[in-house]
Amino acid sequence: MRIAMFSTKSYDQEYFEKYSEIYNHSFSFFETALNKNTANLTLGFDAVCVFVNDKIDKDTIEIISKNGINLIAMRCAGYNNVDIKAAKSNNIKIVRVPAYSPEAVAEHSVALILTLNRKTHKAYNRVREGNFSLKNLIGFNLYKKTVGVIGVGQIGTAFCRILKGFGCRIIAFDISKSEELINLGVEYLPLNEVFKQSDILSLHCPLTPKTKHIVNRQSLSLMKKGVMIINTSRGGLINTADVITNLTNQKIGYLGIDVYEQEENLFFEDLSESIIQDDLILKLNSFPNVLITSHQAFFTKEAMDKITITTLENFNAFEKKQTLKNEVK
Ligand code: NAD
Image 1 (tube, protein in one colour):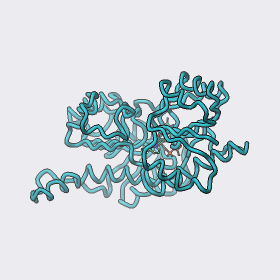
Image 2 (image 1 turned 120 degrees about the horizontal axis):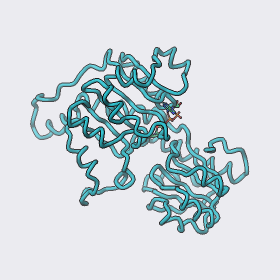
Image 3 (image 1 turned 60 degrees about the horizontal axis):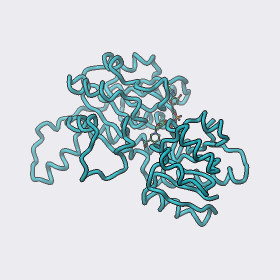
């Protein structure tokens, strides 16, 4: 198959080329994201391969459909950036990589917690400058703290397993319950109780109309003063303006995010020599208790291998007209 790869970086090319001898497809790597303005680049290809910030809305889908595309392969788990209805009505199938490494994302969430809490990022800079003072570096024990998890699917479950090892009490809200987690000692509680009781709140549910802005002014009003909020799922789960208000009035004690509502204009790019035109991220960056990473939670060698192989297998299954086990319906 001839595949147009969008939003690619050198590491995407490296991983797809690593497996190109085994899988017989041809790739063109575009750095640009797929959206209605770039959709015409798909002329002459059979399929597109996209990532988290490509905007595959109705307009984009109509253009790529006219160009003969009948498969959209997501190199990720989430698919909130695709208009599924429009794809269906244009006879375009969507496939994804449902579980490439839940541990990669769960471990990054824990990295955010530990860094924010024990301030190793600040200590590193201090010591390198010859400043060996401990002033303002005080943290807290994770042992016996209550960690609330919203959405305990594959990543949430991996996260719970790790936090159990720290001796935390884990409370969770999900629309379905898992026997494995109950056996692990996770307590399922109503959503408002999770907001009220958590010392640390970590979001691991998908972004859907129901979960959009699940952290907002109202849910923040229920939380403990000094709560730590971690989001490695999708930026739209958090109402950024409400979070900024609650950082300013010190209701939120710590914020660690790997995703951001308006990340498509910023993340994955080196903008260090640019004037950033996003007041909310500039404000977030001004708080000493906020840690932002640029959607890197997935980024481990193991996850990149799995993403690449699963995506290539999705292409093979489509080409051979086999059942698409990773189809988004
Ligand atoms: P999953 O489908 O295994 O788990 C999602 C869980 O959320 C399920 O248990 C589901 O029942 C639950 N859920 C759905 N709607 C809910 C609601 N309204 N309230 C509470 N729970 C709800 O998915 P996963 O593999 O664990 O991934 C979770 C999310 O993580 C993805 O949707 C994606 O947005 C994000 N993600 C981020 C990165 C990253 O690099 N930062 C990488 C991969 C995935």
